Image 1 (cartoon, one colour):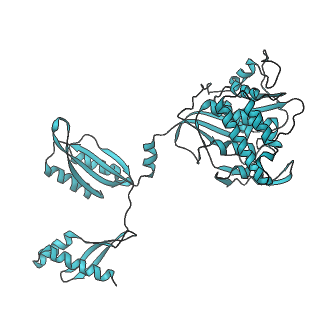
Image 2 (cartoon, helix red, strand yellow; image 1 turned 180 degrees about the vertical axis):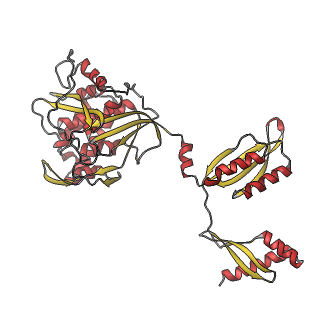
Image 3 (cartoon, helix red, strand yellow; image 1 turned 60 degrees about the vertical axis):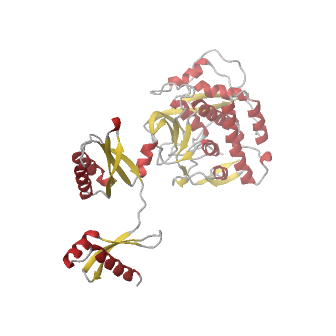
Length: 447
């Protein structure tokens, strides 16, 4: 199947520097070839092995993903090119070499990957590729990743053709350029050791000519690879996600989201050659430090609890501060006794506030107490739906708060201040007025 990068057999402008060769066998390359990757890198230094440990690498697939674009973007990010060359050489494919080319997609500069084939290369079955990877002199992590990518491809092909896994024969994805893409991507990800996060994938439409004839886009094997992966319509008549690209992200990504919470540290661009009508044909990869979990929790918070420790306020001042907090919009306010340093008794003054009133109530708490600092804790809140009823009683009309919802019988609570005023007016105990208001509310609820 064709590649969303629009690969062609040969490229102009491939960067090569003469140098002594590492033999003349499979995957031959020179020291200068490896340093050619540095000549194409503007701004990103070479990353050390394991530089992504504890970090996130994000694949921003705004125009899809393909195997060669993945490898090129990771090299542009800072993975040394010799890591890719050595891994491909270790597989032992005769007559195969890889090179980089400078690339420009619109106004964005990046890197393209070229896989060159010399001589005839047969199609390979999944069983042959399994044996090829098992005997390759790869590190364990690279081997495991490459095996996982090809396993995803083989399962997709077996599903599409309704065949046994061992009987799957790869055509386009068994060619040497696809093997080089898979092994190169596996080596780069193993080198970085970052957690891979990928964006939802844009899907093109139309049809494509391949060994199986004319097939609809997205290609059947691509869709089968992407089971469980979020996708969306890109409204582009082109193949944006290839089977190889799909298998890489589907097997290696830990999750899929629009943009993860991270602090960017390095950015790489892997370019394709096809011109797309409405977007750059490139893959952007971002290496970043994950944002602290507390920031993630704050984003979903509906309310905050404000707290201040004080050890030099009287009870009267604490009560006054609570009254001011409630008057300023706090949903609740309270004080708890604590023992502070040197055994001094103190109080924790707290208030439950909405996000919109956070700044105002922090100011009130600092102004009305002797504290020099306020803590805020993000919290979620589950609320009963509530309403205020006005009921008729022998003591006049009185307000009653009613809280409903799927949490058992409604909660009924007459407003105390109104009941106290009515009790004083009629010279009766306040509990008598409260009982009358509850009875009236219950009679309305039963209607």
